[in-house]
Image (cartoon, rainbow over all chains, first blue to last red; front, top):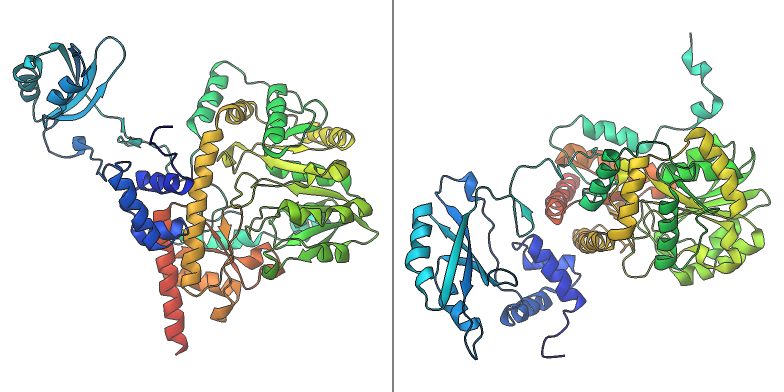
Length: 171
Length: 392
């Protein structure tokens, strides 16, 4: 095995709790996992340092705000380089702040990027004037998102599912 | 006409559930935060729902075999072997029932004669005593104690068995205490059960919600295997309470007798629910495990929070209930729950709803999110503070 460790059971449970709600207090996590607060803090520090926990973010449904925001999926084809493969050209792409998420993929095209901008024109301009001109990029295809339904395991639309219809007291 | 007099003696004798009374109190109040629910907060995994919808689309809307779909019985048989190491023949030893409740009903009816004694555990689930009375039998209660972690001890079992004892009904992990029996605990009961020849109905509905120790069933002891009737179902582990689907595993002679009763009163369990459950057994191990992990963290949270606020609470090894002792407040269980409801609008169930031995305790369900449990326990803490101030 290389230097990746198997995630211990308790690390797994800690991560599972934080994935559901990153705002749990250390004292709540300690109670839920039947551990001391110190041990939770120590483990969180370690998981952060090892970049297993990479951040604690807020999931926002911008559709419900008056903020103008468009999301685009951009497929990119690129020529891999001797020694670097796809990694160096990828770094030329993901360093742009506009790129929110980027993956290297198998299949018809090489990269998938998720980009957010204020208007379609703004995103289109970014693609034409920046992404498409990067040496080694041979083609792009931009698709705009019309409506988000689910992101990172969270359903963003109003859905009856899981609505609590349980009776107030049952045996 | 005095309609009461038209009712059968049995219908008159069985008491309305203590839970019902509390439901009525809580239900007429606005904005109640409930910790009183005996069913999972999770919706049924989508795979199961989708499989049931698909079965309806395909027109699988007819009765199934009395015992249930053979494929489902096969999967139940595989499941009990895979999880708990006990084998049951899908053709002769398994009946799919309308919830675990029907399983209990047909088992009791197939075994009990008027005057026979049936041992039940106290505190215990509300439906057990009425099922004995409806069969004409005599309920004999064993009082479980917190000092034994609400386990059944060999001494208590021996003392309760008489020549008239026909059946004992047990439920571990337990609703309402969360107490559970390990294999070592059961080993001490096995010789007594074997020697007395009694039949044990083992309600194993909370089997998948076992925490520190793996679930153990009496049916896994070969010397008494044929004396054990296993009741289980999909309600708790697969979050399928409203689907009403359970099953009963038993020796072929008893199973045949139960199937006679089942075919006349039920015919067969709902077909679309059976197709859903089939998918659950085949594909939902991961979902079951995730729910179990959630319950475990909630249990840890509640046990610590109640102990920290001065209500002694033992660490239950299973199910989704904690059973805090409220004697230190000087109130009875009923008083505590009523005053808590009136003062902070938090609903718990008095331990006495589950039998006299529940006096001094309340049942707190953790089929709620950690966030909800946090809010509710903060209110219980306020209530305790108010109680203290009142007595000064």
